[in-house]
Image 1 (tube, rainbow, N blue to C red):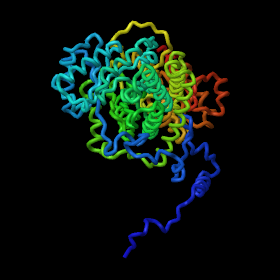
Image 2 (tube, rainbow, N blue to C red; image 1 turned 90 degrees about the horizontal axis):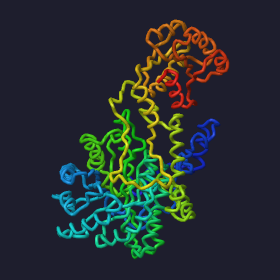
Image 3 (spheres, rainbow, N blue to C red; image 1 turned 60 degrees about the vertical axis):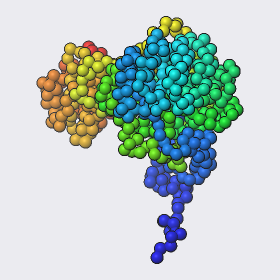
Image 4 (cartoon, one colour; image 1 turned 90 degrees about the vertical axis):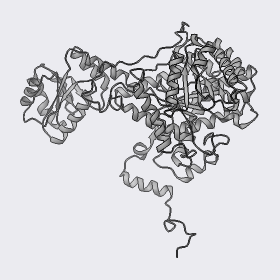
Length: 617
């Protein structure tokens, strides 16, 4: 009979870390371990290919418990429930109310109403909330910053009139004047005086938060994860400091702040981001000496990114937002907004909003993500990421504090410069295909047409006339440049035809034809591939018969010396001639007049723009 005290696999000796490294070195066959296996992240630290128990034992994060300070493992002790939120543009109170009642019956547990400032009134709120049980659903409101105090007072009066239990009201008002400085460059500093009256209006409602930190704007401008995290801490600390200086008790001040953060495509790093955010925010609030540790909880509404959404091949946006929402759910956020897949080019419709809701409901009802508290806890990898992100984000926070705080840094433009530099870098990497956008600069849908779709430009509902006096962030989506290129191609009188002149070595010609097909289709060209030709003359004749505007010769490096120049001369400028690759004989080919080469090291976007220009597009 087996001994119940025996441990599984106890007869196997656990290898040491050095033994693992030695084995890896053997398998690498002399290749550099650091270059081949160590991930150099954009967040400022390296990630090793594997971690062990001893790597995590030196960290403090695994020692925490769910629902307890410093809340790295979440604010809840018994489950991982979050609010499924849907935002509604409430231009009409009656229509918004009808839509809210409808989506509440379809799984939504949190409503976000965007109310025009001029519509804020007692009658409007009564119509908007008619039939909604405000103690059973989370309510979030966004309006003109100048009308936020008025809205808060109207809401409190409404809750009192209806006899709601103050403890059961879970709500927020999106009041964040600093966001408008960052995004629009408007001088809204004078609005900060309304912070204390806003808090006073809702002070008796423990779960009614009215000060927002909207770093989702940074996420939608392409910020790296560590940038969003570091600036979120500095942004929140700025409001805490101002509130305390204005005479608001620290515990009350902390309980009125809510974070609206974005979720990028980096799956495990995003899980770690939210865990690190709670850890650091708890430490920051603790310095203000609140009356209880519960005031140190960070409440986060997470919103899937718009930055990586695309106009073409838009259904891929569902895959992006699905993994993003998974990250936030596993990280234990308060609520999630899934951006509908068509938000890049139109006002979301009933279908796209239904899909967005169901993406969260699948995670809850079928994947049971709401059941287990902090399921990533104890993972060597995620614990290490959490600690590393916290360390790097803290450096950003301290750097901002040295500049006099977040408001001072924003007014000086250093925050905007930092985010814009990252955005520029990411756009460059996308143009060079060092950062892939599925369906845009990699594996495009060859036959897709825009069908009239154009990038959607967000408009401010209040149409504020404040002068732009500060630097702003650039929120151009990562795919925007490629989309503009492809839309120009579509509007041309004739769709350009790119013809693959495949010749010579079978393996090389197929590989280069596949690369070139993918490369050129990103501009919206019609691409014709071929099985191969016996002579360049045969290939050129076939290309011209097909109406080719671009002829791409695809062969091996060695064979280009034999085939490229004869093909170029035989084509005789009747179409644009391109060599697929960077052969050793490139200088000789250039001397013969060949100008165009495409390969992995060229800037794809600029190359395609040049081709369009040569084609008169």
